[in-house]
Length: 285
Length: 317
Image 1 (tube, rainbow over the protein chains, first blue to last red):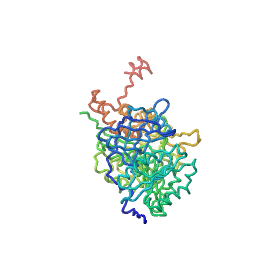
Image 2 (image 1 turned 180 degrees about the vertical axis):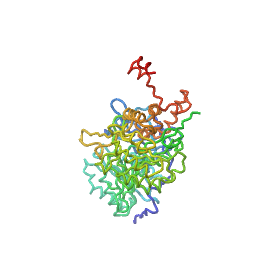
Image 3 (image 1 turned 45 degrees about the horizontal axis):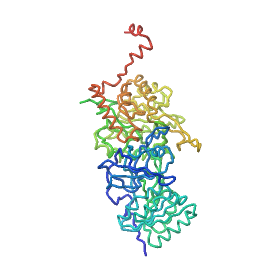
Image 4 (image 1 turned 90 degrees about the horizontal axis):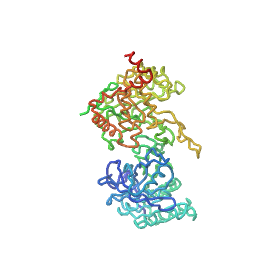
């Protein structure tokens, strides 16, 4: 079967598949649920006030993690949404405690207030027709990919998720993504299946089977480079969600820049407002 | 109705609150109401396109932020063509912040941005002068006087000199800027600082050193604003760690005619508008009809009494 070739002029990467839901707001949300998912990751869900805009997959909130007890996060912390539930007015985050901000966040209890600002940034774009898509994620990148599964399924795309982690017990979202309608393949370091040549083989098989018309990647520069080469080889549409330390979150401070290729030149783009989701081919991973 | 209006550095402002350069841009137009601000102050532009510094460009410290962004700039021509006209849709006056590495380039840039739509120029003289061993213009009175004079000759627009706190005698620098022809002083910029990650033993900033801002610097900058307001006769605009109306009032009381809010907007996106609302509330609650009445109202009677004794004070009177 011939894969559809996606013309970037027909599918501009920044064109939203749904209208942008609204301007970002500073919101006092309420912690609804806060649980451990595995040894490393926690899930936090928030009740939002009525009438606030909701995030699109790939967008993020800027979180004001509460200080105290020797932890003094000064900046907000950007975190991409893991679960978006507009009909229930909820949003959920999947995260790992890695520093001051997430350690402060880990102390929140159900019923606590949590000041969040958003939704911010540019989220994922789906290919124009109902081309099947492949998600490639590792570590916390899996969280960013989470909401893309139901979003793509609702829009008629077949979804295959290739999830990578150090060990099987650290894989997240496998059941959740299956329930949302994705075919899930897992690769791990401990099983010796996560090396680039093996993952490349999986992706090539998916392309050959007509299951990979577009590629989405997050959480690993190794996997991003792999996705870039597979996408380039087969002319696939692709996007990458990137992380960078942020201060303002809205594009004025220029601290969150990363390098990109643009007309043969290296340019800086702001992850907060020109991303965090970018055209796959342009990122210098 | 509280009168929040002030005249400051050649401009009539609806209120004394404006953003600090580098923390404000058109990107915020959907986030708070631009019409509410006393003035707009743009991110510093340079004559040519610049990429800026390596990452990490910011790092947090208790109650503050370290940054070394490195003034990424699209260059003056792109700014004049693409950015200045877009501010015409709002009423507050536009103050354009400029910087350059040599006096000639600085003067050329001042001429380039002296166009319709620009109400004043903020000169960021806290940047290094490449013709003076990389020392910032505003680190010494002589180089300050010289560069301000040069820029005074280059443009008819009001000039606001943004001073650096990394100067030995900031009062003398303030006087020198006034002698050079500045219409106002912005006191001040970030304080040169650094921090180190003890695990990696690397500096937390890509550029090793950077500027400290946020609530941590407020007492230091407040002291400098007070010194400058006493040393110079031109208006002083306070800028350093202002996050609330109470902070703004401190600066107004020591003699500032306006204030700039910067880093606070990164924590609370509507900080500028909140400061304006809370200033108005403070005035209403305290029976203050005009914000002018607060400016320079620092009460030193008790301090003088304690220092020189009651008898001396009475004899003095």
